[in-house]
Length: 107
Image (tube, rainbow, N blue to C red; front, side, top):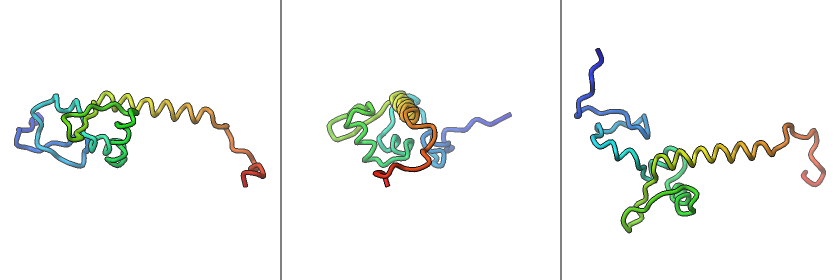
């Protein structure tokens, strides 16, 4: 029979499996991600994550007045799904094969 972890043990971090955190008691905190979490998930810089939120491309909420932003996990997943759709659409517009020779003006 498997042992259940006790609260004092560390568990894998759901955002970054390489890091460990103390076991979380409040599950509702997993609903919102910091911009650092978003940046880590998307493998971008924190300033790029901030730019996505500021531009409205990724929906986030500002908490307080000191540039503290949070992104709901569901909104991030929706953003990722839209990015996949945009990528698929862009790929569909490309020719199936590259031309044998490039036009003279493209050289």
